[in-house]
Structures are given as structure tokens and as C-alpha cells.
Image 1 (cartoon, rainbow, N blue to C red):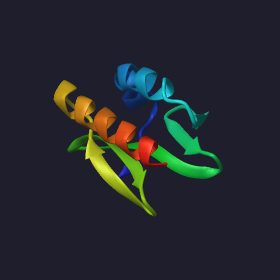
Image 2 (image 1 turned 45 degrees about the vertical axis):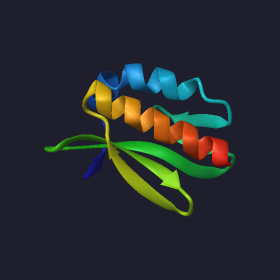
Image 3 (image 1 turned 60 degrees about the vertical axis):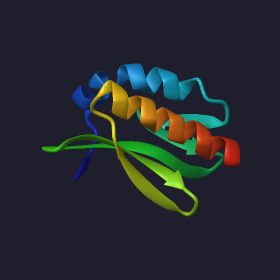
Image 4 (image 1 turned 120 degrees about the horizontal axis):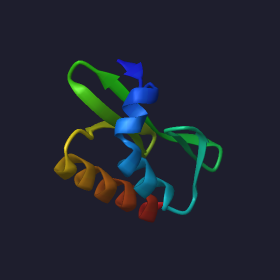
Length: 85
């Protein structure tokens, strides 16, 4: 599974805008977010669709982000993870 390219990130722009609204995240490269100095969130594309890899604890968890419902669930999980610190 490769990192999301420009076309995939363009398709995710509405989601990226909402991710950027969260305090404490720094977008080092388009679609690649860090929390403090630690990689925290990035996106992948493959034939099955688009996915967000979000650091939950010490590991990354993969979330589908293809539909409005999937994106809403992803943003909810992102908010929950950020609240926990």
C-alpha cells in the first residue's frame, strides 16, 4: 500500500481541512501530520480505496476514509485519541 499521492490527497481535501482544525498537529508535508515530534497521521491509497493511518497508543491503526460515514467515524476517533493525549 503506497502513501497517498497528489490526486488521492486532492480527493481527501475536505477531510484534511477538518484534520488541520485540531490543535497540536503539525502538517510536515501535505497529508502527513505530526504530534510534537512523533509521526501521528498519514494516508495511503490502494485498489481497495483510501485509508488513514492514525497513531493510537504506540501503534498505527488503519481506517478507511472513502465515504462520508467513514470520514465522520475517522474524525471522531481522531478527536478521541487527541483528547487522551
